[in-house]
Image 1 (cartoon, rainbow, N blue to C red):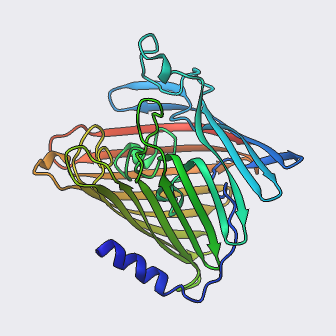
Image 2: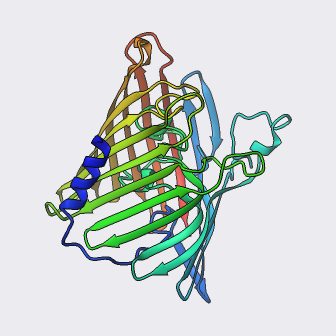
Length: 351
């Protein structure tokens, strides 16, 4: 009931909005470039050097940040196909024993792939998407790198969290004045012939209000609902988020997550938890600086699972398409736990 009332409240204050279209690829984080006959080829290349706690050092893509994609628009038909790849060692799953798990060691791995129609009331399509739980309130500049917040407890994990994709789904997305709305529903069962990461009945929903309540203020709500849980009731991850531009070169943001879905709060665990994330984005000359603090509060009786995460990074923009990022992120458990810290420096080029 609380989730329903929250959603109704957000819609109530937006009653004066009008319906409009929204690009299906609005949240793909690699820039598009050359086009011909409605086909746009785009991509992003990343290589970095990472050092994690436990003296693990590597030169690689730090989490599948490299992308290669096609965007298609012909009349009212819109499509997007995007693959992840690793220019460091060719493996999209670093640390996997490729001799025994070859399916996890592909050089190219599908990230998103969808096709649909642009209508006067918004985009309607089907396929694999980045879910509204990820794309709305997208604050982490280091997503998909070794210092990403979700890799250190600073935000939710797994496909039901901020880094997930939504497979085998039907999607609706629209911009309505200052309101952005997105909804995805899983239309395919996760069975052996399908192998999607969603089950029929799963859904993800998000709504964002931008510059509506106050100039420079963005607020929103997103949910990922897991409809089928073996041996129990359905589960859901909820996230309330907001950002505010306090100065022309400075913004603050907050994300409050209540996590129930398995593996969202902690990897390979059914532990429920809450993650409160607070951060600052500051631009100084050619440098973009990100400072983040997060508190992870486990709902289990195991005190070892409570933690704090701190992250600092700076991105030096070399040109419109290239940058260098250096940063440090640490997950520090309150009691005896497996602390994790990562230092990274990497270069990105978009085309």
